[in-house]
Length: 565
Image (cartoon, rainbow, N blue to C red; front, side):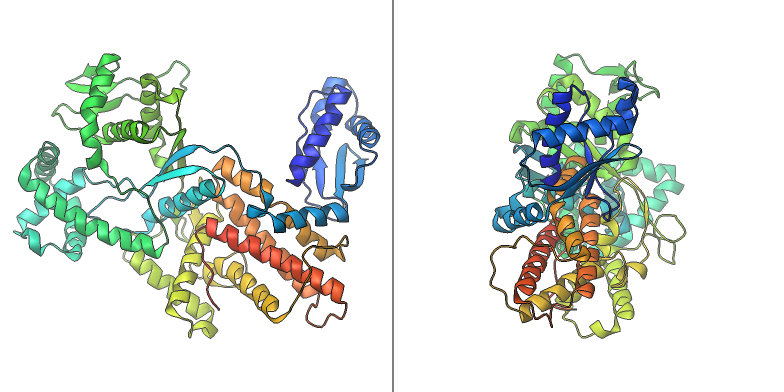
């Protein structure tokens, strides 16, 4: 909001001067000097053959001549070696905060609404959810909520892995142990899958048999389909239980199997457009481009034995999504290691002409690592199941915060979610990060509990005190007061940047910065014993607005607030 206003005014100044450069300003990291800065004069100095400070001084003079009556700035100045510093007026700061308090969604101007399909979660059925499944669910849910908050029509799909080799492996294991359909349980599936997966790696004949079962299932084998139906029923129920705990929800629970009915239509379209080729008995689509620095291998559409692969079902799912939803965008939140796969799939979509009306985005993420820098493992050397991770996190929080051992179980579950989610979302999704369960469980530092403790601390003040003002006055009283107000003004720019980049980390880090400013403000300004009623009511108004922003933005990170802690 504020940045856009300044940039629009600055752009008019630059246009009047005939300077062909964008009016891009940045938030100052020296709040004692100014609120915002412009550094465009440095890059433009070579064009004009002048020093950056000369250009900046010219811009400031033009600004002052155009905006003589403007009251939004307290000060604008050119400073060596060539920056332009902008300092907002107190009146403008408070008037903007008043508008934020009065208007829905804090007066943020939303982009044009689009229909967006987001594909995240993506666990394989018959396989217990472990720490490796966390990021797709947590990051995907947050991106979905940000999109929805910003006015987009969002359609979410978990897209289960339910028709791949693991199904053949589990069916093989169940039949090998003569386990009847009605006797299958989730515990049996948890045991069967890893043992059969390991056996396939050591015994090629077993692997071939599992592949045969998978192929016959895909071809409509009635007996295998009964096993598949039972496995999917049990596994989906358990997956939903975990996702419900994480407050992660989907509009659709489709899987690979649901895409198979679209494969004939997709194949016909590929054949009509002469995109399919035959290579060594398999059917493929060549997706290499002359501009490629590294060779991109063809997408294998159908194996020599007639079986279809992930690329085929992903394309068939895209066919279904375009037919059913006509989306402007389709987003995939998966491991970065699948980048090549999605490059192949998207290039096939380009050949089919799907990219004319739909934009495809792969939003890759890194891994969750332990303190050794390797993927997070239990002491036994395996990725911990999510149920175990939740329990371990709860215990770590209670050890770090023994005064909270009498909290309601529901509040403890909220804290577990906050610990795990904020630990993840504060990091750029494209980067690996180290999950230090003890560090992230404390109420000190950049943690979920710190954010929630700040909210509850301020909320307790607001509940004890009364204030009647509906708008801030024109004053800002001291430096910590001003820093908090300026930080709240950054909400719109932060949210929009988080939306555009698909990075929840931008929003998560902003909330942490708000909390740092709120705590510094509270420590400096003793509201409880303040005799100046006008100042006190203004400060309570400000804290209330800050907490409103905190609560609403935490929801976009899928983090709830406990009753107490």
